[in-house]
Image 1 (tube, helix red, strand yellow):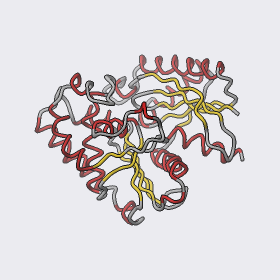
Image 2 (image 1 turned 135 degrees about the horizontal axis):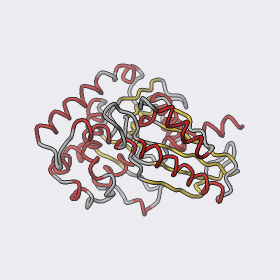
Image 3 (image 1 turned 30 degrees about the vertical axis):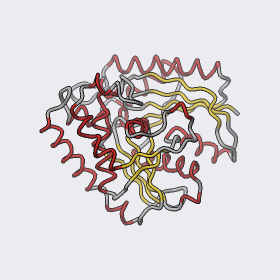
Image 4 (image 1 turned 180 degrees about the vertical axis):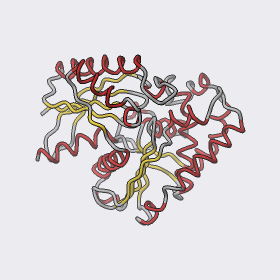
Length: 308
């Protein structure tokens, strides 16, 4: 059957359509996305502004049309930190439902971490042993570790690339003192969340997911996306540490010229690099293997499991 999932993140809204049935690998049929940047459509009190709400409703309606054209039998939609944390999040969801008929479910940060972990486990299989998974979104950083399909520990930390850029890294490029302070605060925030992860034991394999991780790996020498999803890709900590000062000194326009970095995400790449390096350093990880599956695939896999 053909399934679709709408993923409303802090940076982008994605529609993923796959051909799938229980027990089989979901095969991508089509993708559709827009750089909505909900995290930038917020008022001083953190609420989502009317233009962001209306743009979200328009795009969800557009996704619904695409899904119907693609023959989708079951369409799921979910929202993450951008809507979850907004004071008017429920009002935004009600507006989208009234305008489009699509109900968007709210995922907690821990649910995000657990579903992403499931996708990574299915991608690498049982032979990967104990997995550590790190995912940097626009609003939050998700971390999970375990040896089964359900992680032994899963945490969500408010350190997404968009959030850190907005709150800690003003300027283009930011001043060196701001970069240093951002690095200090990011590391202190991650360190507060480490205990449940370290108690779960040392991982056999450390994995990174998300567009931010893929872009950082590409900057550090990984294969381009044109070589396909099965090409092994690594994000080495040493290479990232060496590259980070260069990224910090660049303007957003200059970062957009780096391999694997889109113009829309260029401003956030420094924040992503700071968070990724801190995560790897504090968890004593020398390199992250990049997994092409993440939260959207985890949502679909969990849905398929329940169907079976």
